[in-house]
Length: 96
Ligand SMILES: [Zn+2]
Image (cartoon, rainbow, N blue to C red; front, side, top):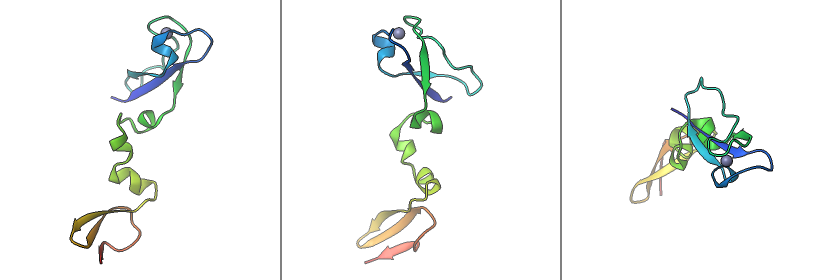
């Protein structure tokens, strides 16, 4: 289930919604309009976690996501030997 981030959109807020807070919601759920703590208007913040439905930086920086964004990533696989783990540019293996 994706995590959505919300933040108070107006002047009124409480410690809960003053900073962004995260809510687990199904993809089909309607976005929250009010802070569950104080009832202030809140707006959904489109963050990396919301877009990727992941919830951690590790997923945003995952090999699959890096490849999708056009990055190429090599991982050290031995002494002077690097293997491509993401992306479609460059050689599969680099040896120094
Ligand atoms: Zn609040």
